[in-house]
Image 1 (cartoon, rainbow, N blue to C red):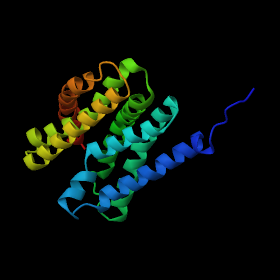
Image 2 (cartoon, helix red, strand yellow; image 1 turned 90 degrees about the horizontal axis):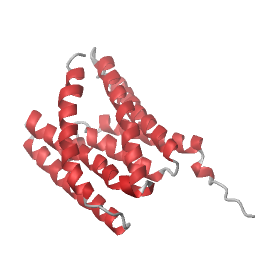
Image 3 (cartoon, rainbow, N blue to C red; image 1 turned 90 degrees about the vertical axis):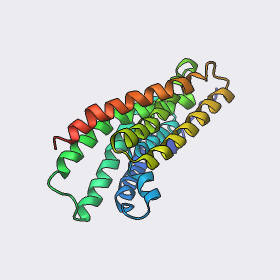
Image 4 (cartoon, helix red, strand yellow; image 1 turned 45 degrees about the horizontal axis):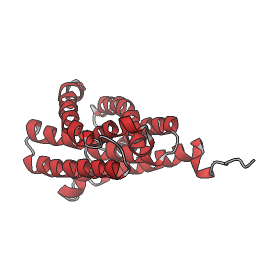
Length: 212
């Protein structure tokens, strides 16, 4: 009787090491691309960029528990990469430690959720795959609301809304082609989730950052 053997690339150490290495580079790039071009700065220096990559990592990892752990590690390592670059660039001010703590805690909360969502869109039970797709897309839509309604960066907000709508369409289409019933729920739930994400970001995250 033949037995399946796991690829060395699927071992927890390999997966988590690769995840951490990519996250450190992502955090470092977020800092170093400040002030280069508006497009590159906004594309990297955003909650969406960090979280979408976390969801993508979750989709690539075969094991659900490992994907969840990888999501937490990725968000934490991204913060480490960013604030290490900030320290070396001599821009880590007096409020840096508090901000780093807030973003790390937020990442440890959101990273596992988004990695789970990425894993579920690709490999999860049929009934929850549309919900997971909405969770991934809601981040971009929610940040669009935050950029427009809170910061009044309307050009950036419009760009994020367009990207969010395209992401919703891509995820819904992917689920439909995969034969997932009620794939349309992804498109219905994503805007609702975006509003919830915006309210959470405005009411909780901004409040915490305002105290440090």
